[in-house]
Amino acid sequence: MSWYSLLVLLVAAERLVELVVARRNAAWSLARGGTEHGRGHYPPMVLLHKALLVGCLLEPALLARPFVPALGVPMLLLVLAAQGLRWWCIASLGPRWNTRVIVVPGLPLVTRGPYRWLRHPNYLAVVVEGAALPLVHSAWLTAGAFTVLNLWLLGVRIRCEEAALGGVVPAVAR
Image (cartoon, rainbow, N blue to C red; front, side, top):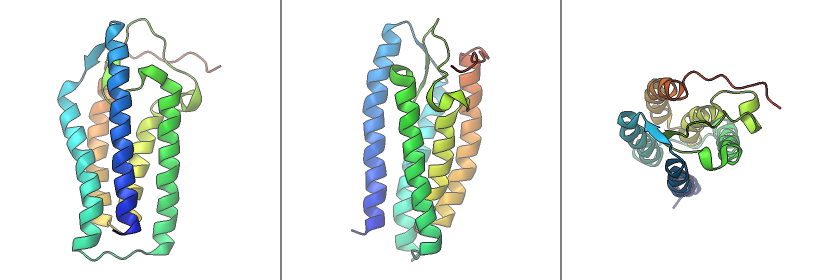
């Protein structure tokens, strides 16, 4: 197994940890009267993220994509930065973070951590990682396809979240 395959498998393992956290957080939210929104876009989103990981493994192997240090090293740093941002988002939202759109009525928007400056920082992490992870090993077809499809799906997801939140704008960050 190559070091890149190990990296992709570590990202996949991280996704499984996210799903465990999300399941626990969903139970927390639902127990407090939370309502799930946008169920229809969730399965395609899961499929797209699985396809990203599969493409990261297959494209370099099947199309003999080389590791180009001048591209791969900066992309690896971006992948690591995206992971850091993702977990900062998860920590900032606490039990309200989820892979699904579940809104608990009466709770104010979170304005700490990266949410002080960005409305959807987790999606920035997703976009950066989705482009950078394949490019660590020159899988430009996977990077391009994921990025285009992901941007479309994120548009759907963000509109869903904004509608679920009722267009609430966060108070001035403290």
